[in-house]
Length: 416
Ligand SMILES: [Zn+2]
Image 1 (tube, rainbow, N blue to C red):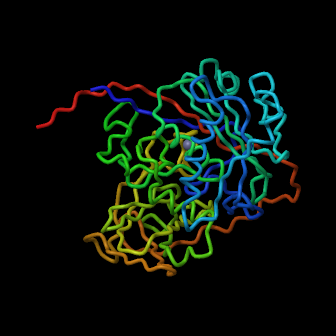
Image 2 (image 1 turned 90 degrees about the vertical axis):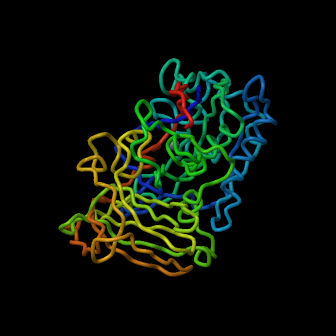
Image 3 (image 1 turned 135 degrees about the vertical axis):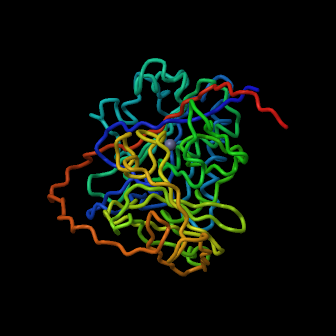
């Protein structure tokens, strides 16, 4: 049996900024603020060219709208993505000769981060992707997206996306999920692991995407394994936390606390998830995702009964496919002394504790790598690193995600 495995890697184009689980960028004057769009009504301007010979401009527009709608229909989030075809209609085809007039140049000397375009560029022949990454990259990479913000800022200026027009063998559903994933990064969402086996590997076993139910994989998992045009509960929770609607408290309760080692010191960069005991749905965040040094976690959960768990981030998910602020490379905090999977058991060793979450209420649980209740040893106070001089766009983007298609031949599966 041959199976097409689609995955993506993401590339941190300008390093030096850490990314977080849940929110993608943590900045702000305090250095602990998830960066978002101030106005959740975001209009992207789509270029007038066709995506490729098979998909003309109008057909590509329908694909974009379907992908955007996955986020737009979440009732507990204010995010609203829309397309506008007029602003770029009079402009020439955006291609490898002129893209730096619209999106950041490859060397970052031009950002075009202040023209209110939020451009969506159809890279019909893959030449823009090749220019950004490496010659031939467009055989593997389906697109990339990012947003631009100011150092110390709490809000994105604008974003952009480049979509590869080459036929890389994706189904319509896979293509829409890829665009939804890229737009997730555009609006500030990071990757997520939830309760997927953290030993999944692109070369070893178990193979990426081998969970028996593809719908257990969120849209924001680093690989595209999902095969339904819907969001996972984790995606819905994450977008609601980042862009909350007024009635979020009628639909979610909060489970928060700190994750610590046996002596009460914060564990940074562990995967923390709650699993609904009725539906089996998992929702996750990375410990210390706000980079406060205290192992803080916070989960927005639909009302119900849950168990609480922790494990290590999959070592595959470093670099561009990182999850949380401590997985930027294989030597980062998430991968040093990786914790063993543990369930929260309360005061003594035993079974996983059933945790009831009610809408509008917050439960706080500080627990340790043994699974037991714990007390946080406060980290040393950090002196503010803000020097007061903020230069206009010091940074560009954070994460450009790209996609890598991998055609993996799996061993035959024998049914007994
Ligand atoms: Zn990604």
